[in-house]
Image (cartoon, rainbow, N blue to C red; front, side):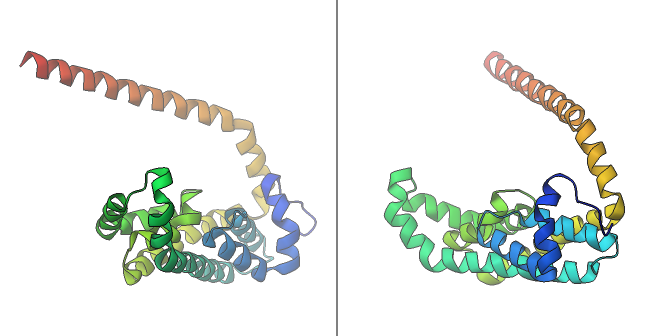
Length: 213
């Protein structure tokens, strides 16, 4: 794979990966998890592909990825914790974010925040502001740290595993995905439409039953 160009979006980060190596992986993930809109996830997958092709060490990619993701999110948490609440209370009224709603958000994060923090890693957009939101909501730092680290291990481990398995076959795998992705999207759309239709019908039936009872 020495002279192979990575396909699609992975090719865009390949020069950075080849020039900076592990430092590029760590820096990109740190910036993304701190809230900067950079392709950290793409860089992680590309590095794992390189490891699968024997050009990097997968253990090194995994460890650097986890550390960078955790540190980045915790900086976001600090910003949200020490500056977020006052700023939110000062300017929140312009977007209907009242102190009462912030109180409810704080209570929700303290009760269910662990699940949100862990799953947020896999959701683009939420992954970048995860720490900031937890800090603003007043989530306990040790709780955030634990669930955030768990999410980082699962997220980095998932993409490292898939990228490593792909290895030198990434070009063929990417081409196959591009060829059939619209069929998959169409099938998912049909399934979603069926599920929504059934739920709407069930809800209507339930309301009719309540009115006739």
